[in-house]
Image (cartoon, rainbow, N blue to C red; front, top):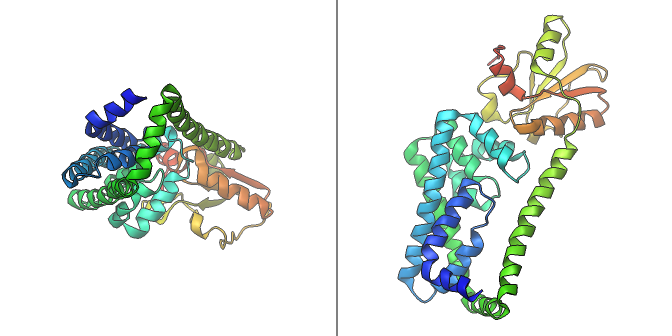
Length: 307
């Protein structure tokens, strides 16, 4: 354990840079504990704290700018991929679009304080065409606030943190096991949360080909679009009723309860659509199915959209 502490003292800036970079790229390795500990170690020197802050901000900007460029080039596919590999629930795209759609680039000021928001918000900024300078400005300020708070907390409670590090050092290998176990519990907890969420979405789906076939046969199911207003600006499936997850509690579907209802979104595993489908079933609708692949699958199949 003492060797680990020596590494932190000698190579703290490199460790902070790599930890923040990986964390902002989406790897489930929390960076805040590292920033707080190194902030405590740098509490005696304003110059060291400033260099530490600059290192963290640069690492965060590199990762976020990479997601921004990916979103600019590949669009919504990047956000879908992020949610598929993330340990956060798949509603992350919907939540990010709602927050970014309401506040725009200034939402990046608080992005890193919201789990699962930062990398997806960066990709979304590139997807919807946020100006490069605007993105870098607000993302840089947000990274400064995020890292600065951790370093301040470390310096403010440096005595308590030093005592904790001393205890861990005295514990030796047991102290290292405690740290590894804490990280493992965090990752397993997030994985279990996602698994339970995925299990809750289990229900029958309908493919875009089946939906098109129904429409071609003159069968008119009620179609409900539950994407964010930002996503809905790009068009929707013809005949769809447009609403959002935020409005679903007050949303009234003008259709008989025995009519087929198709719900779609633009998120991995049809997360939002499945949630709304279950709500509609609780209201008495008997034939409700999410659309597999959502609007992205509909567009990819070459079917028309309305705007």
